[in-house]
Length: 228
Ligand code: DC
Figure (cartoon, protein in one colour):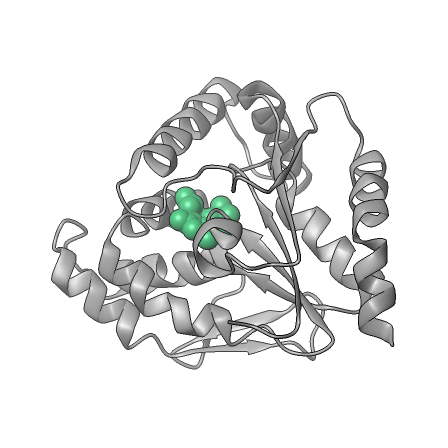
């Protein structure tokens, strides 16, 4: 298990984990693992290969042989899949929905485990996902579980998409989020659930700054320890 400091941030889609994990990483100087990006990459590679999404062995093979490079020298981090820039494609709604399907396959989760643990480098890691505190880093130094109502999460996603100039149907977004929650929470391997020792934060009525400050106050002893 990782000897370096690990802080896990788990929770459902749209709870603000991505933004908060990024901000925490910036504030602490820790590395950042966006584990959802790995599942999205498996999804994208499967779509690009025209694989049958119900063909579990074929999808698991794609996860095992995934050719990915994270270029952390660029901001935001550039993601290369088979030497092609996949940074934008992995963020599309279709890729997200497909990621939720392939993430239920045990062989896909097993294939990504070692890759995820390899991110735990000095001085520390902020690990963003669904099962960071329960499965990938069960001995993490600090665990957060971040959530918000489905409506609040759909509203945030709606504003993000509008800002990007995309046309979206808000009711469809709420339905998508509920569907994805349902699938992520009810799969038999690593379902989305808080670790027993996680700090639970419901951000429905909180601003990003309020959540960040709360997380930083809990993380402060670890940040000071890692800096020594
Ligand atoms: O956080 P995200 O939306 O980028 O994640 C995409 C999908 O990947 C999501 O439906 C659930 C899955 N996922 C997972 O099963 N385990 C993780 N640690 C991260 C993401």
